[in-house]
Image 1 (tube, rainbow, N blue to C red):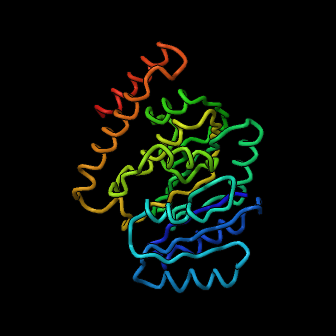
Image 2: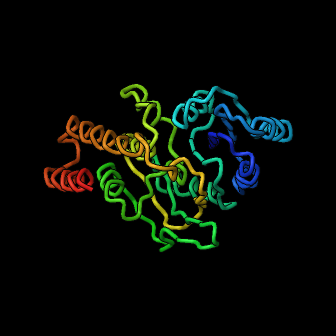
Amino acid sequence: MISIIVPVYNAEKYVSKTLQSILKQTYQNLEVIAVNDGSTDQTRNILDEYGKKYPEKLRVIHTENQGVTLARMEGLKIARGTWIGFVDCDDMIDPDMYELLIRNAEKYDADISHCGYQMQFADGRVNYFYNTKKIIIQDKYQGMKDLLEGDFIEPSLCNKIFHKQLFQKFFNNKKINTKIKINEDLLMNYYLFFYANKSVYEDICKYHYIIRNKSVTRKGLNKSRIYDPIKVKKIILNVFAGTRHRYGSEMKEKRLWKKLDHFLRS
């Protein structure tokens, strides 16, 4: 089973399309956990109606407003699946995205399976990242290196599935900073790639990242936008510095240090 966690905040205009795109997946061994993060519009009522309509597939949780990270963690607490996926409440996914991801995870015995994404703009433009159809197998070192490079690995959690054991390893060893609002996906991905022995990436754009003017990450400059990326970089540096000599060779470690240095300076 795949547990798909959808944190939802004030998404009355979009969440129905998001849920429909998940519920219509060709891969049917899944559960959807919608976490209403203290919405003040009609989101709560919409989610409750969907919960009544799809009682075997959809579970709805209502919480006080805590932010996306804590909303996801609330979903993780009750997730029953062997695999965990995330979808943002105003995005959409292709009908066969999870079929593709689980097939690759099983075929390549991977802990993380991920795909490309397409960015859709309000004016109808679509940018594909990158749709080369390539399949790339990543060990722990390569996965972390590719994530820091950012050339083709999207730092979002939403175009991936993760084996549930990765979260168990993370929670047994680390504590996430839930106050970080910007780059929180990159930070969580870094931890999960660190605990993964193998990942598989197929560059087909199955996830639809929809650009909206009122997106949290597109609001005016504030303290989170200024300081959170700095905090994330410092945390990643400290994690790596505390786990040296675990990458198979001195050469690999030097290469990862180089990527990390470039990442910190960007």
